[in-house]
Length: 161
Image (cartoon, rainbow, N blue to C red; front, side):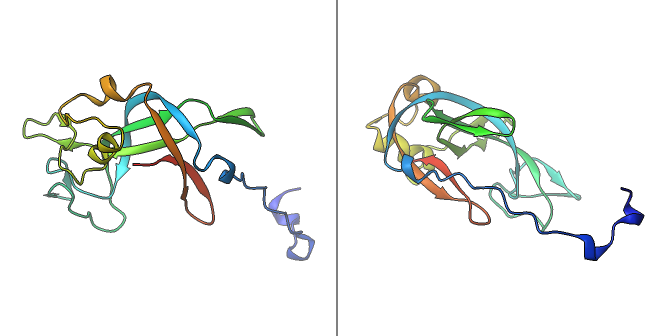
């Protein structure tokens, strides 16, 4: 049927797909399996990237609709379970994103400020030295899984920090 043949009176409602209930994983313990850097869109300046002729300070909000690419640290747990999707079986894991900062030479690093999210995780896990590399000290550590609210009545599994 082409678009010209479609009439509004012929339209039918289509039920929404079933959302995955992840509440059963709340409070479970899991080991950290992967620690990696990924690139994401950010709504905040990094002190280096030019946006429409201006360089925004680190943490300064960009104009509405503007983003830059930022490198972040992503920590993911071991497999907690599986769910069947249209594409087949998919692993269920908890993950958390941690902001990184750009240093004056343009390289990336993590903040050792006590209020930084990564430092809160270090404290929770009993890691006293903030200068220890996350890859070296976090892999294999046991963390608590939490359910975090997402957009539009969704939720996802994170790590208690």
